[in-house]
Image 1 (cartoon, rainbow, N blue to C red):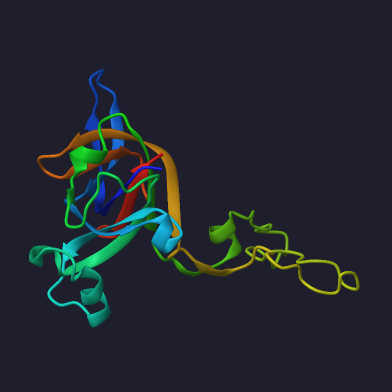
Image 2: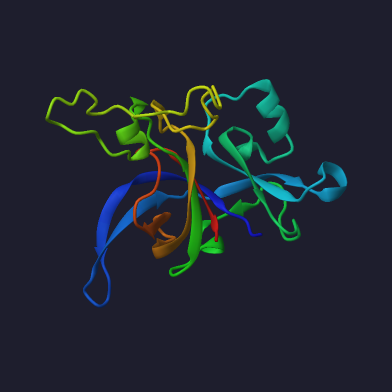
Amino acid sequence: MSIGLIGRKLGVTQVFQGDGTMVAVSVLAIQPNVVTRLRTVERDGYTAVQLGTDPAKRVTKPEAGQLKALPKAAQSLATLREFRVDSVDGYELGQTVALADVFAEGDLVDVTGVSKGKGFAGQIKRHNFRRGPKTHGSDHHREPGSIGPGTTPGRVYKGLRMAGHMGDQQATIKKVRVVRADPDKNLLLVNGTLPGARGSLILVKKA
């Protein structure tokens, strides 16, 4: 397992490759991350590196307690996330991890974000159910149909796909190709679309 980075989704655009083909890409802004804590098997039971980004105007006392061991400039960070790693050797508190240190063009990455919330949605939108007949006296155009037998089992099975809240859930897109990496502008362009709205938090790590 290797370290990842914390970033923000800027949006979706398109770029042209060397052979002239056009590719849709998601643009991620990844500012340099600061190592805020090192987890070890001896002390914590697992191995991980905690990274921080997004300067904060003020932090809570618990957050300040976590960051007090860092240099003064890194003691007010709004976003903290952990990445499991095989070893914490080579990392130290206050160290800056930049885009060029982790990712390069052509890499395959796993991207995690929170999908857009869609509110209360029916089965057709939420689970891609087929609709009922539209004509000939039908009165169940968008209804789900049967949700189970009567006497046996005499109940509705858990997990049955029904209408309900859609979106606003953590989602991970795996093995996405890095189309372009621009360390000078702290931008990472990855193939296709990713979960989340513009400006939402994104975690990127090697696939």
